[in-house]
Structures are given as C-alpha cells and as structure tokens.
Length: 275
Length: 122
Image 1 (cartoon, each protein chain N blue to C red):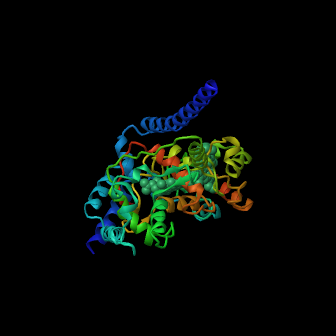
Image 2 (cartoon, rainbow over the protein chains, first blue to last red; image 1 turned 90 degrees about the vertical axis):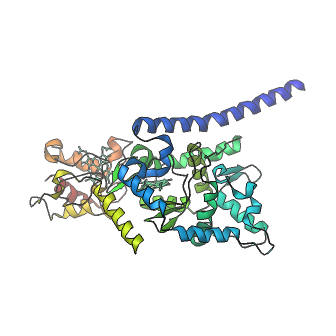
Image 3 (cartoon, rainbow over the protein chains, first blue to last red; image 1 turned 135 degrees about the horizontal axis):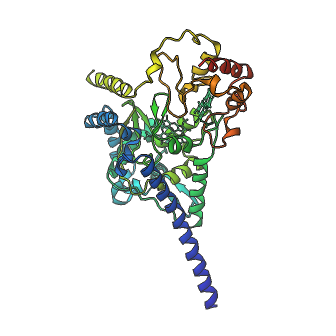
C-alpha cells in the first residue's frame, strides 16, 4: 500500500517536473535566440516592441509618453474602475491587493474550469458575481477603456505566468502549436514574422520581436486607436488572410498563455503609444 | 492641435529613418508600365515589395525580408524554374516565408506569367 502511494507521488512529481521544464526551456531558448539575433537590444527594452530596434523611434516614444495624447481615455478607465456597482462594491474588491500588481499573473490556468483565464475574463467574472452586466471581451469602448487604466495598476510588476500540472501544460502546448502553425492564404505563422523576421521590414513596417509582446496593453496606435492584445491578434490573423479567431476564444487564450510565459521576468507597462 | 502636429512629426521622422535603396528613385522606362509591375507592386495582388526590393519603385518603400529582385535573367536562365519559385516557394524551401502565389491562388496563372515577364526585365 505504502509502495503504491510512493509510486503515485513519484509519478506526480515527475509530471510536474516535466511541466516546469518545457515552458522554461522554451523561454530560455527564445531569450537566447534574440540575444544572438539582436545583440544591441537590452533585455528590459523588449517591452518597447519594434520601437526598441531604432533609436529615433524610441526617443519619439519617450517624448510622446511624457504627455500621452490618450491620457483622457485612461482617465475615463479610472472612473469606470472606481465607480461602485449597484451593491456598493467596486472592481478592486474582486482582486487581491485591490487589483494592484496582479496583471502579471495573467493569463492563469484555472484547474476547476479546466481552462486559461485572462485578466479580462476575471473582470467579467467580477461583474457577474456582483450582479452587473458583463462586457463584450472585444469591445474597446468598455473592456478596452477599463483595462487601459486597470492594467496601469500593475506597472513595473514582472510578468509571472505559471504553468503547473498536466492540464495547464496541455493549454500551453496548444498555444505554442498555434504560434508556430502556418495559416491563411498567405501561409504565415506568427513566428514567420515575429521570430524569423523580427527586425526586418515588411514594406515600411519594422517587425517586432515576439519577446515582450504581451507586456504593455492596451496600446494606442498612432496615439489614438485603442487596441487590446487579442484585438491585435485578430489584426495579424487578417493580415495573412486567415479568418480571425474571436477575442476570448480558447485558441486566443491559449496563445496569450504561451506568449505571456515567454515574457516572464519582463516588467509590465500599460497603456502605451504604438505606431 | 499641438498633439496633431507632434504626431505628424513623429510620422515624418519615423518614416525618414528607414533608408530607401539608392536606385529607388531612378526613372525606369525599360520596365515601367508592364502589367506584371502592377501585380508585383499591388498590396492586394503579389505584394512582392512587402519583402523584396527591386528597381523602379519610385520611392515606394520595399521590405527587407527577402533578396532584391535584380539581374533575374542572368540568375534564373530557366524560366520554368523561376515560375515555379513564384508558384510555390515552399516546394524548394519548406521553411520559406514567401507566400505560395499559385498554389494558394493568391495570383492567377495569367498574373504569374505577367510577373515573370516583368521581373525578367530587372
């Protein structure tokens, strides 16, 4: 009897050791890939995306970020965050630490739901639990504006995504498979552009490295167009003439889970300027 | 107003920081106006410029993903092979990011012939 228990425990430990090793090996490989491919870019600077690859672009970013043209939108997000529900509670009541330094723990794998849960999904869960109407995950005018402030509460926190247990690992692997699979009439994978060709130009646009792509959302494109991470995924799906998946779909959530793990250790910074 | 102007300036500075190839401005009577040129340059059709620089772009920005399309006749004496590269680049190189223009029906057979005619003048 004791033997069996020990054997089971052993098997459990083995499984969790494997679960740890695979994502961490992936992450180290990606960091090493960019270290040799783009030796001039400092690790911390990957959060600036394509702007990290060009001095002029980066200094433009810095000066825009001093007085961001989208400040009033973030301010509106703050009002939404602080406005009490009908029952008197607020969003802060649903998150540890009032929602400060939490976004870097997302996406998280929820064992009871047996799926990946994003920060946005937990915001909706909060609305539901308090008897309020949930937002549409893809709606930039509700969820987008709210998170343009809510995510700033985690500025400076380091990305800290965990993959623990076989089910979580399976979701991570599904995201990884999505990332490397070619799709669309134009036959690209995400990696075609953001790993193999990061730093190259596609027409006039410099392709950002995959490393750091999950740390700074929402982004305001051209300083004014609010874009969430998963809305950007849709854009990149459309660019290759693939039918885009839905914001909040299991496919995109697993993809975000895989990509965010690679960013573990990088600091978060919301809401930012992008070209 | 202030913000508008500063954003405009950003666009100018960011655009200017990427150098165009020396021959981008050259006036090319030799191959300008061929139907294949329109196919190669158009974002909706071949969009070859997204990845390949080539002569005669008149200042249009080309990407830096792929080798420049120059001296094609010299380097690709076998027209059928050149056509095959465009029809499905992944046949020769499974890892190629070049979209399979014919195989995925991105271009029609006629458009591919036009593109080959055009790049043979480069």
